Length: 368
Ligand SMILES: *Cc1c(COP(=O)(O)O)cnc(C)c1O
Picture 1 (cartoon, rainbow, N blue to C red):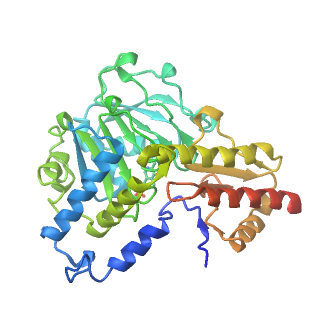
Picture 2 (picture 1 turned 90 degrees about the vertical axis):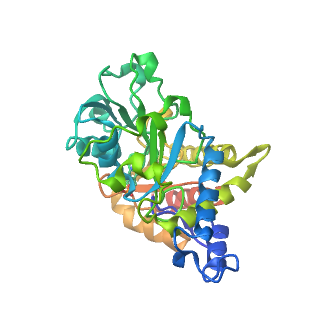
């Protein structure tokens, strides 16, 4: 039987092959007599799972040796506090607001330091990612925070800013939770990147932090030890018990990504090509329709999260029911913006997007 296509924004779909492999290994991992959930995080079995996952992530995203990769808990929202606790020194920091997530990060930072808004697209309803040429950068800021993919508003930053050219030596902090591993990262422009796993990596519970080594030793004294990047790094993410099963699942996902191929492209480059094709297919269908619409400006449209609205919101419930009956799950938009949202992460095949596009056409023909 065919599995339905799952468009959830997160926790989100995981490739069937990955789930089936996890199922096969559930009670006995590689003949060791234990399931992964039952292993000591300090035993040789789990250490090998952890080391393989870390090294595959480094390979997939070409993370340079000057960066530590930390496997933490707490999710993206905890990082909104953990980042200022570790990097702000209680002083000035800059934010660019491009949607709900950067806005939440900005508000949380107020508890620990003096955040300031360098640019915001809130006045136009978060319809684009503010162009770096318009940013008012504070040269004294300890870092500048952006969310490179706004999961709720469907706004993506498609080229990381070069802060040096804007007159700032501040490290760039990126929340790349909802598009990590969907495309390469230009690490020359980044000081720290964080991502909750439940969007484009695997199950909830794991947060990956990639941090430049020179930023490790400046945490505020009130920073909880378990959240101090230097402590986590020194202990290879095992200062406290890490989310072992989520790390294992992330590791299976990384192995799956390494096998993905699009023509001569492999891994993340293959995903980037596929993700662009998926997004183009869906946006083209929405733009060609007079019944469905997406409000985001063309250069800022997300390849991962596609919010769209019916011309007649009274038909929303009918749309969702018919979609569900056709095996198209979890298309309801975030409650703060309404409408619909199709999240088309790495695990979504192009066939799933095609099925959604076919449904949009049929729905418009029958109901609009
Ligand atoms: C989901 C999400 C978060 C929050 O993640 P939690 O794990 O719920 O704390 C933060 N930032 C972005 C961009 C997200 O999509």
